[in-house]
Image (cartoon, rainbow over all chains, first blue to last red):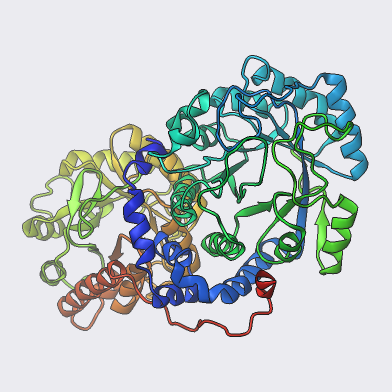
Length: 368
Length: 265
């Protein structure tokens, strides 16, 4: 059994209705609990009925996050290894149909990027690729990880779904965590956004966290791309996914990301716009649902949003990110999305310090 | 497998379904008759009994066993008194032969004073017994990690203690029981320490699948009446859990918004 079997028992429309039926009393009850929240509580927290309670949710989120993580925020940085991609995700700048220059970084180019990144102070590196197994398959990733491993304390991946044995193999090269975002949990609508390519297969993608759990990967990241479908229902599917994984692969830790669609190359624009209030409501709902969840905020978000969220539930943040392969060492125009916050790490560090928070450049050494 | 239970009011251990979520221990009763009446009054469908106390030469005429067998409830033999995994497996095999049941309540307490369960021997014995086809219900400390390790070796349920056995102190391990209940993929039966029907109700409200009680019934002024009181408490607690217990509401919408004002900028 995998989460696919659970997902098949969940009805998108019915959950949507159940969320809309939640009342202020349901929200107050969820906010008053001092035990672990259940899915019904989560439905209340992401419902329209919770909108007047945003301030309370913010305060409780701050408290819960400080109790678990202290007044700290982790810094990490993405390194795009390639924009080669066979997928046709209609919302993505790397879409196979987009006539852009495709790059796969060589060893020399990777090390040039590493040099710039190390000068910024980073110890946690997130490696990203498009999905192009022939050019950037598991052999390429393994090689790239072995190449950069001496320079970083923590290596995480955001790449195409792999097999369990491949994840096990990458663990030997220092793999600490993997983020595979479902984009949308809506099984019926998923193929519309992913009309072709390997990513077309909803089930293969959905079962990736199961394969990560089986492979014993330490950190597993979930996420839905906000803007595709109703974020309230996505939240409930993701909450169900989390609870399932936490029970089953209890040795792993979990993180959630909240990517909101940014303007990019191509013509797709978000259909379900997620407002700032809704965006924070979702983040705070997840914090209250799960006190030990890691939550990150990328440079897709504005400086104002990022400044405030430092102390309101977020546990890690990137700064000075380039979303184009080779972009740290050289100027080019191949980015996956345009960052909304272009501040460098030093400026971000000062902002964090000014709030009485400490920056964690290095969390734990990886002893495996 | 996650327990995807169709009927919320029933629950399953191994392949046996139970309507009653109250299990009874059979020690410390003033007489076999009082025990029998208490079993009937409690409406329990499973009672546990120490293998070491039974006359195995003739189980049908054994003083204790005959009263239990007469009530027709499922017998859950327990290994109480064994000191390690080896002894426990031996006791379980004896029980299977004597009572033709593969249910076994695993109790391994090398410590004769507080009768606290040995987690290392319990994990070993559970793994071995599960491989031999037993439906294993281990009595354990309220340790969430041990529960997950037991799941991995094939336990049918977990039986974390609420407080030291026989102490009637109630749910002293509440914070850990909450984690176990949240994380478990097998039934959670709170065992040991439950001293009053209110404790039983409280465990059920938290979402425990069942409770096991012995001393509080056996040594009550009126054991039969107390058995009935526990039956009602367990039922009430379960009903409250299914009805989605309301929290004490101390949270309301706040008019001022120091943390969220930036959203209106």
